[in-house]
Image: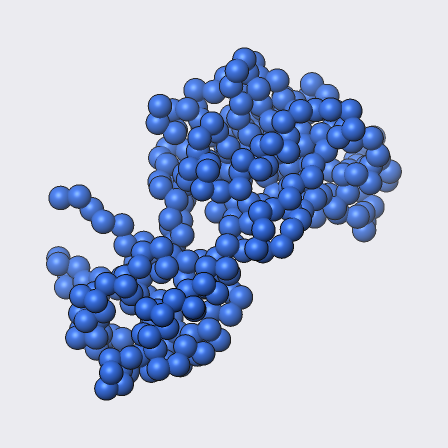
Length: 305
């Protein structure tokens, strides 16, 4: 079954709903994340509100594109990635059973949570909807007010907001992603990007492209967008293709790049030319056969002709 069909055919209306809240994930960059969550009792009204959010969010998805590190979706599309390519399996194990020791019993167990999981069960099918939490779940720093009988009064009750949007869905074998940044944060994909860059720096084929790699390292830094592009660069592997690199050296000036090469064909780069290095090695500068103009593109997706 196609991923979008699986998502939209799940019987949300008749499903049992549970709500899990998490603080974290914990753990180092070099190890899988540790998810420790608690489930909280919810009323029928809350359950219905959660179902309504899930239904509305999946309804707006008209197409699903394959997840790619530089790829971006729009308000009517989503990205998909195989579940076993992420840490989603660890998260679903953490919400496997609503046991008494994991039940929320005090307000403080909800405060400072970072994301929540809406778990839906219908017969033998499960679906999870994940949302990163906003500041409304943090330690209370302001008075909550309500309007009644034509006046404002203070509401002293604990206050938590449920968003009317979903960041990503977890299905049997795949994820459907609506908010790429939140997905990468919750499942620690952006930490993987940083690890990718460290490993790329030790790759002799990559290191030998440059007279000095330090300016590129300085440019990328800890910027999550740059790190994502570096991970994509490593994934595509154009720098390992001698023909690609030879054509890049031959045509770089023609395509507007200002990166000089030494006598051995190595790039002499600065932090200012760092963006050009990533654009070139990602093969993201293309010429239109129709307008003859040259474009930088967000994703070099091949088209079958």
